[in-house]
Image (cartoon, rainbow, N blue to C red; front, side):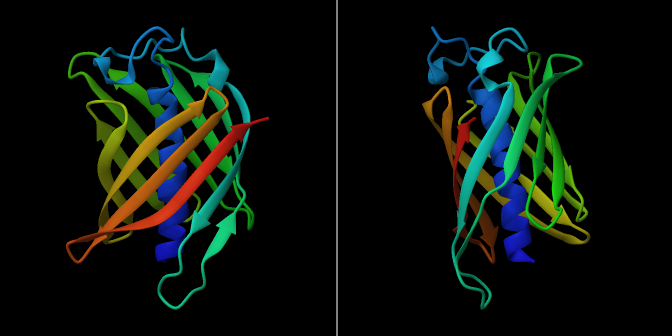
Length: 174
């Protein structure tokens, strides 16, 4: 269950970076400037290859996954992100920015019944909840844009009051 949750939260994290990288090239990520959907994110549109490292947990060995991701524009100045994983796991995400509350947001759902909702004030550190049925866990993602075509994400989950890393991902645009 935890590894599946890790895969879902990783996917949400990748989608979240789309809002981070949508800030125009001349603005600092920490400037507080909202992204300009969809005007300033054409470099994100397309197909990405990802490598995700998951640490050992719950008696399972550490492993790597290699999902593909596609990013496209969607209505209302948002982005649509779709992940296709080995084992026929799929997930869909919508990412955007609310100018009224000055908050980046991300909503996701997957083919295993997972739902993730995260928000951020700075577009770098995102916090929220990952849910599978009755199980709900706090999650957080921290993003580094290595280049316009390479992104890094570290996802952590809080269990029993303790934050632990549950994935580290690097995605490269093809």
